[in-house]
Length: 90
Image (cartoon, rainbow, N blue to C red):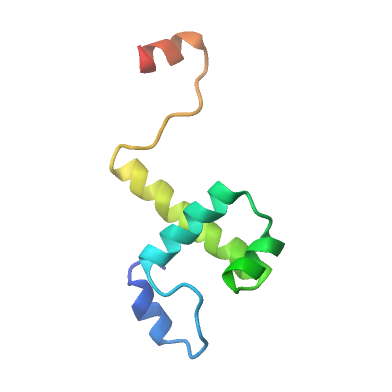
């Protein structure tokens, strides 16, 4: 699904898009997380339907997570015990 650029995938679709580049998708994803708006409000603010607001956030989160993991920038969030936590951050 992500083997092509956003621009290439949009060329096959005749509808107008709210997000037109990878940079806009990243901005939308970070904005939606930081603002903590509901999908109803994101729909109004960003000019897309609720389902697209949720879908675009999910796609953006998946790409962001994969990128951070690949760049070894993703924080570890799950530890089995205190010793594992101390070893990781100690």
